[in-house]
Image 1 (cartoon, rainbow, N blue to C red):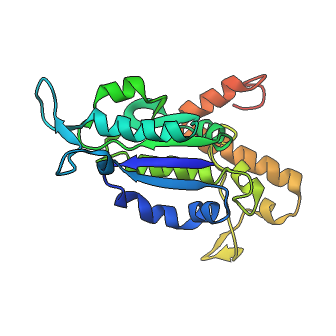
Image 2 (cartoon, one colour):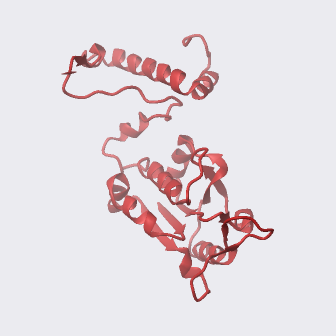
Image 3 (cartoon, rainbow, N blue to C red):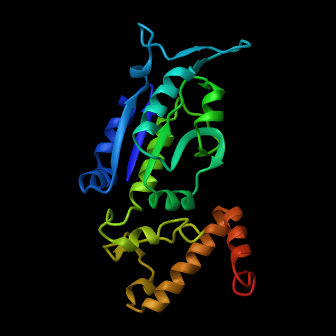
Length: 238
C-alpha cells in the first residue's frame, strides 16, 4: 500500500511516521508513505502557495495551481483509490472507513492549511472528505497522520498479534472493555476474578457485557446504533 501526503509544512509529518506501528509497517514493506512539499509546486519566486480570499475576510487561502500540479502529477504516475481531504465539514472518519482503506491500494491525502483550500480543488480533485471531530486545528497534518496510523495497524501482517486489531474499540460497534495486567493485586485493587479463571467463555461474556455497559454510559449514540443493528435488539440488552 502507498500513501502520498501533500503538505505546506511537511516537517510536521516526518517524526510520527518514523516510530511505532507506522515505522514497523514501512520497514516491513507493508506500507509506503511519501511526503510532498506543496511549495515545490509553486512557481512564485518566494514559493508562495496562498493568497487572500476573493470577497474579503480574514485568513489566507491555499491556491489551486500548486495543488493541481502536485496531485495531477501523482495521478499521471499511478492509479489511486482515494484522494482525501481532512476538513471539519467532512464526513466523520470512523473505524469502518479505516477498515476499508486498509484493503485498498494507493491513497493521496491533501493537508489543508491557513483558512482552507481554493474550493475548485475540492470540487475537482478530492474524492473523499473526512472530519476527525468537531474541532478546528491549525492544519490537516494531524488528521492525516491519524488516518495513516488507523490504516497502517490494520494492514495484514503489520501487527504481531492479528487478533489485537480485531478487538479494538469500534471494531464491533462498541467501545473497548477494561484490560488488566500484572500484578494481580495493587494497592488493594484486584483484577476481576473472572479474568484469572481460565474460563474463556465466561471471560468472553464478561468482556462483551463490559463493552456494552461502557458504550451505553459513555457513547449512548453508539450504543443505540449497535442495538438497532442487532437481529433482535432489546431481547438480550437492557
